[in-house]
Length: 366
Image (cartoon, rainbow, N blue to C red; front, side):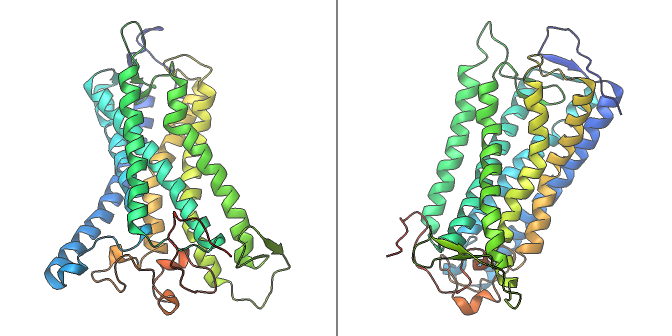
């Protein structure tokens, strides 16, 4: 299917007419976004249902919704996915009207997309970092306060970037900051630095860190790498032991599926956008790039579905989905609980020994 560019004016960046085929392609993107929206709302519905159950059936001190740092990170991730899905579904207006144009609705879509995309990127980076530190450095993340502070600062930074970007740009005589790009509203091509800071920088950082973390942890899961228990920066390579039960180790690195899924869904579209940086300011694309943008846009819109499937398959025993917690709030379960609680399997070394060190404190390997 060929999606050719069709603007009202060769120089008017504030409005973009959709062709029939482009409307069909955008409809597919929106349907994918709607599927993600429903999937993410399902997750929040389960969390809310279980919270109400605790209020009615357990003591007040056990009402906590979040019991581990990873619960907080997953909530942050799905909050970002919710924003991204809403921003995608908002394109129904453009399909109905057949035109994408600057205005209050366009601005709202652009802001929501910025919040969701940047928030999701930074949260995914944090998940990667927590997983790597938990396994490689042997530092179990137990502090809810530290994790809450990290997530708060992350979202505060995202909000600040969005507010500052929309405030200092788009002045009289300049191109609007949020415009059609061209099938939905986002940052105008005249502001490449803000595009990079608002999404692409975090995508590439997350991708780079995910690959750098996944390769050694995958070798560790196979038994090819042995990490020094006292000096985390020291390790040795060896042939994998065929008799070693590596199921626990492989379970431990499952959390890296989230950043890898994120990168695989976001990277293709970011490459297309990167190529279009050299095009027109309004994001005009060649027919080939136009088709790729909508095709990869569908992949991006399905990221919420992908993450929900990952959550239900890798963390089905999470306290977020249990009506009653099996562990005390803010406490890392001991080794005997690991076999029944996947929460800490992502953060503990094969030895299973409890580590009271908080993530955020300098490692002590003396």
